[in-house]
Structure formats: structure tokens, C-alpha cells
Length: 167
Image (cartoon, rainbow, N blue to C red; front, side):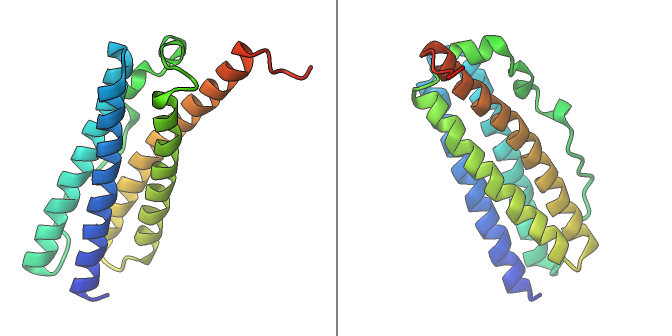
């Protein structure tokens, strides 16, 4: 793959991360509860880290034609704000409000990111490029799992609140 194609992929990935960061910051700004705000800000911080990595690799590819070796490891412990995903947080989010809508949008963002990064990892000839995309895919998958669980809990909350269980 040409350097210009790789640079274009990195630019598009950066924009994708920036949009996710904006979504999470907007949700945090609308959050009335400090824990809910912290949850969304932790996600925004993660996206900022991803943007920094993509920018760093963009500059490396632009400068040398290849990815720069880094030590990337995706670990749920690296995203402490996501640890507060519990029943208390679920109760603090209005299941039919903006925050829940942001969670639904975030699930779509994260699904797309996981797919994009996983495909790039498969297609990459450069082992370091593959590692970067594997790492990003793993990290976004952590977000996706937690956000999907939150989305399901919020849906159940709506059903419970409205006695919408058919049995």
C-alpha cells in the first residue's frame, strides 16, 4: 500500500476518534450527575489518547514512510472511568434521555471503530502497523462491550419502569 493511502487511512481514523471524543464530551456536558459526567469524560480521554497515537503514527509515516515502534497494550484497567459502570451509574442515567441516546450513538461509533481497525490490522503488511491497529481494535472493543452492557441495562430499566414485561 502506498504511503499516501496509509496517510489517508490514518487521517480518517483520526477524524473518527475526534467525532467519538466530541460525542462523549457533549454527553458529559449534558450530564447532571458527577459520576455520569466522569464516565463520559473517561471515554473522551481514551479517544484523545487514540487521536494522539494516530497523529504520532501519521507523522512517523509522513517522515519515514513507516510506522514507529511503540509498546501498545489494551487493558481494561487503563480506562479507570469505565470501572464505575455499575447499578448506581445505571440508575443515575435517564434511560429515555440524552445520556442514553449518547450511549446508543456511542455503541455505533465503537462498532465502526472496531471493524475499521480490525480490517486494517488484517490488511497491513507492516508488522508495526498491524500492532497499532490490533491495539486500537482491542481498546475500542473494551469500550464496545461496556457500552453495549450499559445500553442493554438502560433498555431493561425502561421496560421495568413502564411495566413492559409481557409475562
